[in-house]
Image (cartoon, rainbow, N blue to C red; front, side, top):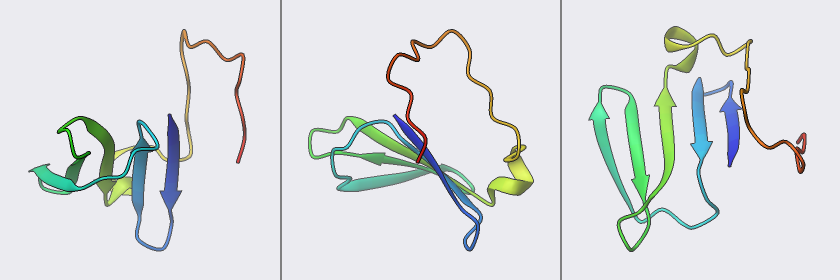
Length: 71
């Protein structure tokens, strides 16, 4: 899983897998779910992210961090 933020578009994207998205569904204004060819959820796009969440504060809890990588 990877989380990325694009300051230019104020979009926070949670990549759940490396599989390509072929379909999207806006489930709420500014919240888009991306699905692969099999209908599995592959990502979550949160538009206007700085208005919805504190993008300057990320915490992780109870995750196995053995392969933690910074990009």
